[in-house]
Image (tube, one colour):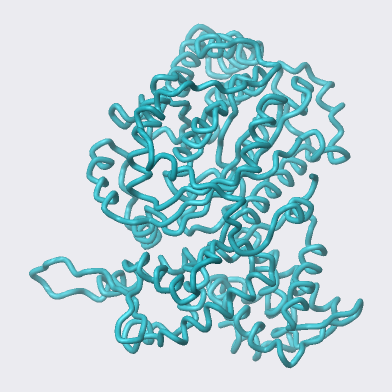
Length: 600
């Protein structure tokens, strides 16, 4: 598969298929966790990989020609001796490297079995994707690329791979985790290697990191797992990909050091995210708590809560060789010896950027949208006073959510909506699961404001805002989980409203302008604007909102409700980009007064 659309065609859009996903906790609830952790673990490794221990891996990194060259170069630049630079290299590698050991993997498996059974009603995994991964790890080096929404992400993936006898990955983790007493060492011996958050212009650190990752890939030591988004998303919306790690991990293929590399996008969906409140407060400016063992022990109160289901959707393994065919001339990498540093060309950078954006888009397409995400979309379109004072009528929320479910299915979304349960029960249980955000009372739904702490002085206006803002931000975050489904039709709906035109060329121009405005907000694959516009037209036609020809896009009478919803869905993002007001006014001066009214 070589494109996002081809990948999507291979999947099934619609309600959750119980035959496609298997609950791995079901067996854990019936049998011994100790027996599970100490069962025979017999993964089939990459067939081309020589036998290699962690010590062998580190030795290969330290003795590489690339690091020898870089050490001499940095010694000349800084006036230090080569020996001093080499000592610094050893220190960086010791701080960074993993020390994967089966005994600690078993200990983590036992602990996580206990924790996951307390937190989640189910962890559902698509077996087709897992079976393809099991085959892929034997044929070429594998890069696992999950989305990142929770600290549970990397734990769940390692747990699943251990369960199904697939080699446990080495995982790129933030250096603060290494500083956690005992926990940091357990993670290191379970496969984590630790990266500083701010590398900046530290040439030596970057050289050690890149050589370490490339050596793992070249030798096929283990699957490498890293978050292409770089950071955990505090808004639960996909972040722009970080290109450095993607460039480093694919470099062995571009330089001809391996025949191929397999990329496996992984989509992790949560009914309820463990850190939902923490993320909302971080968005409000509350400092993120420092990772510590003490903090982890204090957080054990989360074990008293129910977080619903987790879906882990392993995507189809994708060949870098096939994906990049015709997009890059690899002969350029033969002009410089492999062991010498080489600045990637503009062509190589564009190829890596396209590849990284594609991975994030495939992650989005693999997500399962929860009923709560659809309800959050609808709740946020109600006035705040209705949510906090009057309450939104229960039957009205139910009707709107079911209407939105149909629209999402028309748009090709994958929904985590149990097909064997009455819709009213699904919606009721969803509200009960998220009782920290909304509550149902006397036939109405209200926003739950944070409890006031005991205080001697009167509540300040700022405190009052935070009490209301935190649950609203949680709602917005869950709405963001489904924005990728609606954003392209929403941009076309906005273009139709603003331009008041039916001409495709004019609508396409404004659509591209909105893509440019939101290029840091949503994921658009570079160079795919015509396809995105065409997709928006097709989806709006499919739901009966518009009809279109080669020259025109005509709004149908039945499409007003859909277009109004989509415009309102995008409006908060438009409001947050008010600094682009002058550009919007320049785009269509004759609409100045209309733009002032509609946008701001």
